[in-house]
Length: 230
Ligand SMILES: C[S@@+](CC[C@H](N)C(=O)[O-])C[C@H]1O[C@@H](n2cnc3c(N)ncnc32)[C@H](O)[C@@H]1O
Image (cartoon, rainbow, N blue to C red; front, side, top):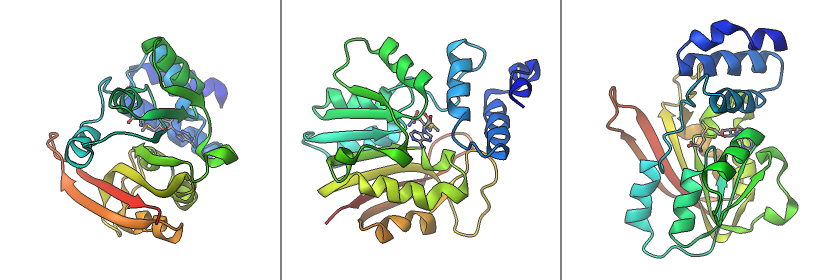
């Protein structure tokens, strides 16, 4: 199967289809998160463009920061940080930022892109975070990690995210959204509000839910939700 993943046919597919093929192949192998590093390695070798990496901070994060954060202080944790633009933005705004990703190639790439960064970039699995991160962060940000994971990992993912939020701290989730009864078989697999309500079961309190269509062509449904730990 490993050989199959190197198949030259992958190099002729659109980048999103390449991501889907990799995600499905690794899911079948019961390694649902192993494909990310593979894709980043292809990205670094310039055989694909990483479909989600805009190389600028996430606009849905920027809007939220403008409206809701006049003061930026405390410890922020960026989950599944990818190529680091959101982490750098929060650092620029004054947060002490830790950013992690399961893909070593992504973290190495962050180091190459931002050699003088004040962000602490780390390879780490959301499902196996250090004990001293638990309930330690004033702001936890997740953009698009939940939707990249298969449905069977979602409730565990939400519990793991919730665990990182300090008392009085907040979790911001930015994700593609779907109705509770809509299917989500192919990447990106949008997240439902029912799934996100798992954050309440994990001890957080819902602060705000924005459910809107973005200005892409065609417009995509998005959720930007904030939960806090009382
Ligand atoms: C769709 S990408 C989004 C990346 C980045 N947040 C962005 O918006 O550009 C999802 C990211 O989550 C990372 N990821 C997936 N599962 C993870 C896990 N269990 N622990 C840490 N990172 C994970 C992937 O490697 C990938 O970088």
